[in-house]
Image (cartoon, rainbow, N blue to C red; front, side):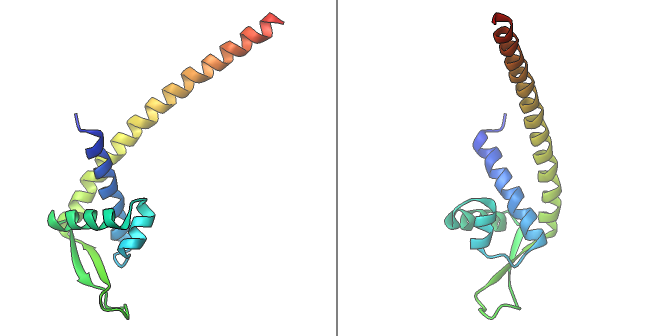
Length: 121
């Protein structure tokens, strides 16, 4: 079984890869805000994606500040995005089904409690 931390890390990688595919010019600060992690955490995530060969670093030519970079998905990154998307979707469907079952149980408990209260009057 995959650990909770590994799932969270993969979810973060998934979200970053999705954002970068659409907006390779996003800054680390913008990515961090969009994903909900610190800028330092985003730096770590981007370095991990670069080390894995999923993202490459390029100059963002339209920027006046030549220190700005574009984070471009590599062919390996595009392929991995498909695999991560599949795993993410399976995990989210399982979470949805578990939540749906819990809601049904709670709803029946509330309905049962309401019937008891109404019957006692």
